[in-house]
Length: 243
Ligand code: PGA
Image (cartoon, rainbow, N blue to C red; front, side, top):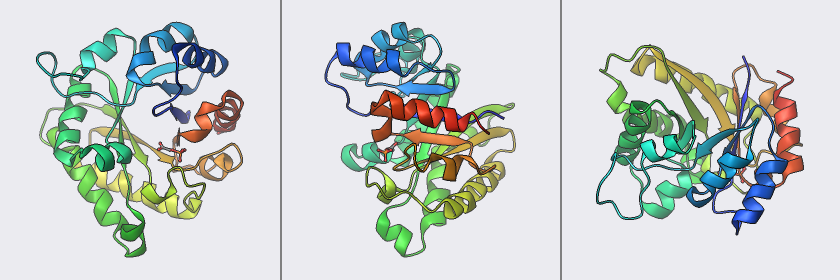
């Protein structure tokens, strides 16, 4: 099974020219590039091997929703994946599990693949609440998919411990493996027709990527900071291809 590497550019870079340059230089098979909305069109036109994704979506299809972007609009731009529920959106923009559940449904309804982000804060981690937090985020986030007649749906879950994001301090790979197993078990209990790839995100670089990707239970990586350097992200994709 091939592993996924997702580049989350966040609110970078500054201009279309820089976005096109970064996309062109990072354009390798096995990579999903998620630029800011404003660069999705140009990045989509610039890549031939990588796959296009988005960092967010709105849950309605069309209408009076100032500033929002629908799943259909993303699909028409060629996006295949959508990151949903990133902790930076949960923390800075008040995104709730309920909003996330609606976004997951909207994305699945048009045939795009959601990348649902889950993960605990430092204090939740230190007080042993990691699994409880993740279970709540999964159960609520996937709540619209519980009773439906879903048949073999593919989703991606990104385990992103919040304390590991952008800090240079990644999770301990053995702990990540334990959490990925827990996520798989929890998803199966929610809906046995869901096929989930479980990827890890949080300070992944070309130096530590192998420690995560060599594990059978970790299906890929979600990369923020290191995805802004094309040499780095290409090295990470090359590591992923070894497994
Ligand atoms: P990071 O970000 O790789 O810069 O830690 C990961 C993420 O937030 O997706």
